Image (cartoon, rainbow, N blue to C red):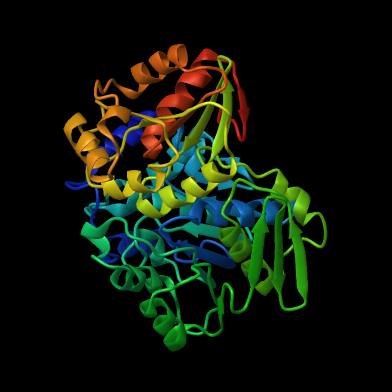
Length: 427
């Protein structure tokens, strides 16, 4: 019998390409499995940034109300199981292995990508568990993403920004059109983008039964003391959170539309949500770390706002590694005035990762002074150890650029078995 890791390694080799957008193949296998409707109520979430926050907020609120819920998100940080959760808990290895066996038997000669295969496994697990709500986070785009094989009961777009241009298009209108592909005729739609592209607005006008846009139909005003949410007669005080307030507001609006909000204790639930790698503060070896998975210009702008409002008395150092296909200068530019010293680093085991030359070129293109850049480019693991010995207790070490970058650091902290993580600790 194959282990979970055996299966995951096999899935990486199963299809000739990592990404192949399109629904024909995956839908064929979904029909064979009978998983086109994995739960009575399905909520599909698309967006460039903020999807994870939106799913996590809905998941936590539904669980607190005693509703049964499956949540599917990607990518993971330390364990694949993080992607597939039922009632707030990661599905165990043995259940995932069983689901993979079922999908393998059903697919016949149909070739599936890693994401398509795992999506089908998640849908099968949710259907088998008899959950009430399935929360499905789109992996890439929307229209042709494997998650979109399911006809949703409510669609959410958290944001539309520049990312994955090779797959989704070269401007926000094209990217918005791809994300709006999750809409269905007559179903409600919630949008958390404060300046949505016309392509999204048009899709909502032509398809959605009712559309709810932030700043038009629901609002959230955030400050240092938290936020105030309003939707019709509903008013809620949101405590200070390290999450996107706009995505949080979209999640609350979606559940309100479905009459699934808890009757009380919403603020307490929100205060307990902490997504790993999203402005996650860590005290480790008597040093302050800030971990953020941001990997595109819009995410970097959000991180910059957080840094601006959370100053330190010392210097801010940035240990950064990113993927080669990203807009590196756009990723670095929002942080130019907030980072005192840059430390580009490598992910040698990741074939998609940017090399030293690309990282340094991106920093220069962002207008960052050469004197602020350490051009030695160690690996993330080595760079972290070096910086922990050289920065002072009053300084801050920002680690960002990709999920892989943050995962390297979280893995080291977990392996060492100590350190105070203000946020969710992955086991």
